[in-house]
Image 1 (cartoon, helix red, strand yellow):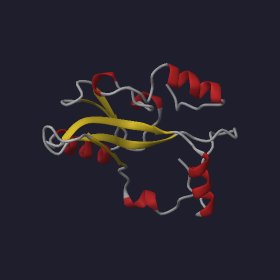
Image 2 (tube, one colour; image 1 turned 120 degrees about the vertical axis):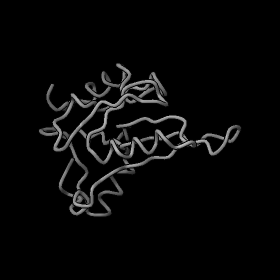
Image 3 (cartoon, rainbow, N blue to C red; image 1 turned 45 degrees about the horizontal axis):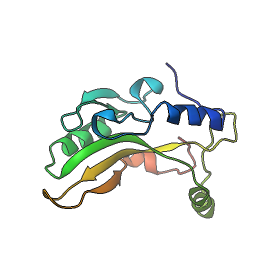
Image 4 (cartoon, rainbow, N blue to C red; image 1 turned 180 degrees about the horizontal axis):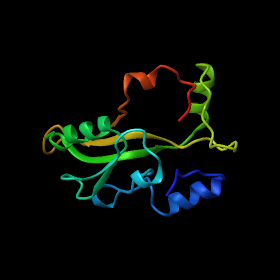
Length: 149
């Protein structure tokens, strides 16, 4: 399958209804899967020890970070390619910084960006669980914020 492109809000709603970007542990479905987009590097489907499901990593960097998370005693759950739905505030922040908020090709539909990882962490048994968001990017990918997704 080629790159998934949404043309309308209804397309995004169908993707959500199908369960993508939702769930925890074994029931989580990444918003973006390896087969959904062309990769400029090596993408992988990696069996998860903690989650009991396949993880979809889109680069060597994401894969190596996933391995670190798998072996951390504090990590309880790992959700990769987690959707960050476009909100007016995020578009306003981008505009204030002079960064063009990305739209799906050929549309005026704001792009659903993803964080590489949403990680559930618990410092020790009995402690409150908390969420952390992590994005893994190579330095060369950080140079031009208007380059687009």
